[in-house]
Length: 98
Length: 168
Image 1 (cartoon, one colour):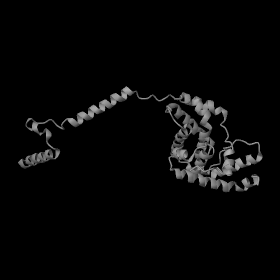
Image 2 (cartoon, chains in turn green, purple):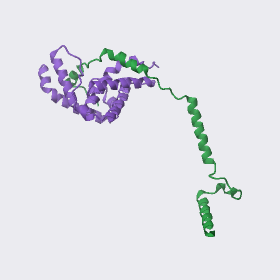
Image 3 (cartoon, chains in turn green, purple):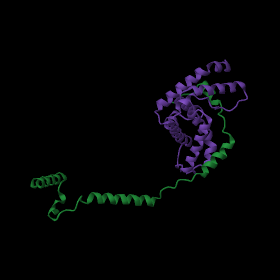
Image 4 (cartoon, rainbow over the protein chains, first blue to last red):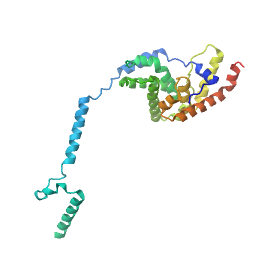
């Protein structure tokens, strides 16, 4: 993909690009030196942050949405669709009673 | 592992090339100078990752993103392409070379930005097509074809003078 350059290319390549004005060097390096280096977030802080998030997620997924009633203690393994059906039936019964 | 270069070392080795690359985007010296200044400020804030095989290509890739961001912010692409050309080449004692340099500057300014920037990287920064593709985030074939189009246009623009200057 990089074939041998032709004489025209070589002649163009031989032209020197102009150097930068010497005063730019001090100007630019001075400006760059004034810039505070961005502090990296310490590793211990990142690790603590990750642990806190992990703990939050674990608690979120392991805690039931609402406290179980004593009689429903055995329902902790109830599948969500069944739970929804039971709730819908309870609501319908409530509405019918009124 | 060699120590990372300091900012003054990076400036001495690469600032001119970066400036000329920026001019291919801005089309004027003042904006290219501002871009270069901002680039070195950005560079001062970050850590150069160790073990970079080709520092020039790495810097040019950063510079490319920097220039693209600038273009997006300023929306001056069309203006840049139509602006008066920035002097790219050093002054030559030889009047023929000086004339060629002047014509070449004008011919480069006539190229679309994509072709001009690829031509600069290939001809004067000495990058391979693989490196150019990496720097600009384009396919290898695109880099090669942009260069080929650029070279043909330059050849056609410069032909009368070039043929006159070349010994037959």
